[in-house]
Structure formats: C-alpha cells, structure tokens
Image 1: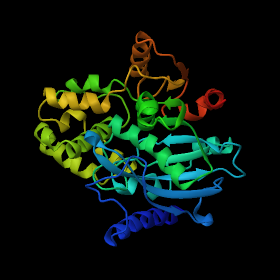
Image 2: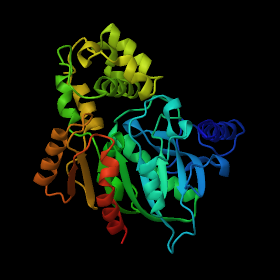
Image 3: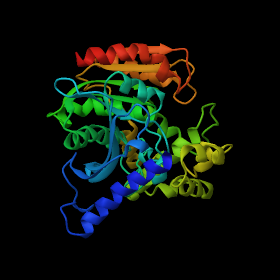
Image 4: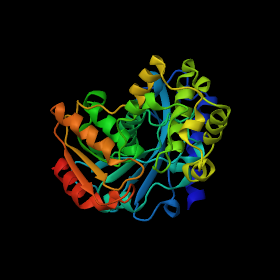
Amino acid sequence: MTSSLGRRTGTVLAAALALSLLGAPAPAQTAGGDPGVVVAATPVAPDARPPGVAEATYVTYWTTGPMDAPALSTGAVLLPPGDAPPGGWPVVSWAHGTVGIADACAPTVTGKIVGPYVRAWLDQGYAIVATDYVGLGTPGVHPYLDGPTEAHSVIDMVRAARAVTPSLSDRWVAIGQSQGGHAALVAASMATTYAPELDFRGTVATGAPSNLENLAPLVGPGFPQIPLTGSTVFVAYALAGLRASRPDLDVDSYLTPLGVDVLHRVESLCYEEAAPQLAGITIGQLMSRPLDDPAVLAALHTTLGVPVQGYDRPLFIGQGLFDDVVPIALTWKFTADLTANGQQFLFRTYPTGHLTTMPASLPDTTAFVRSAFS
C-alpha cells in the first residue's frame, strides 16, 4: 500500500508540472497563488486507501511559507464511511509529528497518514485533512519547526480540502502531536484572522514543544549532552530548515565541519534513518560558536516561538509526565505564561511518554472536540 500511495502523490506533482508546462492555469512557483488555492488533485483508488477511509484525495495547494512568501504544500483529504451529516462533515485538520525534512518523508509519499490515533477520529465521523507541510514533497527544504509556516499549511489545508470535496463543512478543529502540536498551537493563535471565512472551533495539542526559542542562546560548543530522545536530530533539522529559508543568516558559519556534514545528511534522511546515524553526536559537537547573533535569535524567536496569547477558541493541551522528547518542564512554563496572559485552556497530564500521550488522552480529547463542534 505504501508504494501505491507514493505513486499517487507523484501523480499529483507530475500533474501540476504538466499543467505548468502546457500553459494551463497552474501558477508558477515564483508568482504563487492565493492561500488554499488548489494546483492539482487526484483521487486515491479504493485499493490504495487506508482501512476505514471511504474516499481519499491527494492535493497540491498554495499556502504561506517562510518570510510570508507563497509556497506549495501537499496533503490528503480522507472521508469516513457513510453519508455526510447535515451541513457537511466536520473537519479535523491533522498536523503530524516529526518525520524528517526530505521529500521522501512526507506522509503522502510514505503512506503513513492513518495510524490508530487518526483512525480513531475517522471512526467518530470526522473528515481528516492532513497536510504534509511546506517543503515535504514540494520545492525547497522543509522549514522544520517554523511555526507560522506550519500553521499556514494546517489552515490552508482546510481551504484546499473544501475546494475539492464539497461534502466538507466549514467547521473545523486543529489536532496535532509533537511537531504537529507546535503547528496546531500556532494555527490556533491565528486561525480566525488568517481564514475568517472558516468556522474554527478549537485545538488539541499533545506533546507540543514550546519555549525552544528561550534555549537557543545556550546552543553552542559547550552545550551539554542531555537525556532526551532525538534532540540532536531535531536541532539539525531546525538548523537545516533555517539555513534554507534564511541564507542571509549564514547558518554554516556557526557549525563545525561535522555540523555542516550532519545538516547535509539530514536533508535527505527521514527520522528513523537519521536517529541511528546521529546517535552519539551531541548538539555541542555540531556548533563552532554560540547562536548569539541578535538576527539569528530573532529569526528563531519568530519560527520556534509559540504565542502565549491570541487563543480565541477552546484549547486543549495534553502532556506526558514521562515524555523524554518534549519534557514537561517546557509545557509547565508554557501553561504558566498562558495563564499570566489571561488565556483560557484545558491542561491535562498523563502517566505516559511522548507518543503514548495520544491514545491516553483520547477519552478527554474526544469529549473536548465533541463539545467544540456542538
């Protein structure tokens, strides 16, 4: 099934290229299109759909990328079995966790879109619209943990999905885990202003990293080895994305020769390949000098930072007490900042690790999302 799904995505991108070459109205990459405008769409054959999916369509669409420039993203629209309820299928915009920054890592390429957690939402009668994010399957390096870019992809995926699937409602929620939780939180802070024509109902974010921009000034040759899973890979992904989107910052000048080599390697490695290759390499070994330039820190604040105000719809934050990827201390700081800024939210903790917070939180998040749509 994976190879078939990958071929379907290749068909979408090939169609977009063909339209451009033939002079059809597919916009050029340099010109861009309005956010949510669909460049290409292709139905997924019944034998290639994941179990529990009645209809599936892959789309390529315009969104807003780094530095607020137009950018392309890809994604999938998945419908549950049965007839749409009155008003159309309520929409879950699913923001996936870290897969890598290479095109080959995109969920619509690997076919790893519908796992047990996403299927649980389909089984409840929600349509799933799932972005790959900018740069995963589209031109350029994926700007990993660039919150505004990820958020735009999440929101514009709803616009694109409704353009190709008339049975979708304009009512939607954002749900994300890990990197996707980061994306969903930033999306929540801008959804009603960025896409006022949609009826945004709320957000679920689990295992979401926050306050990373506050750690950036500490990143340098002396950065200690930390007992967290995947940290070197995540930092390498973030620096590679920043290097591609902000060449003016000269990211390579902060790196050791090993660091330059690592960033080059991770641009073509999905997480499950990068993690064993970078095992034993510390963050400090990547760096030749601290990330202490004001311009670099300002860029990281813009991309990594999660807003602590502006949430005008219900917000659910779930965190594993034993999460060794996103430690709970970061989330405690985030929720304290939300409280200090008068934001309303639900915060629940679970005796779980990183990924296991998703199923553990389902009883709570199911009720939360049902209430948001009521």
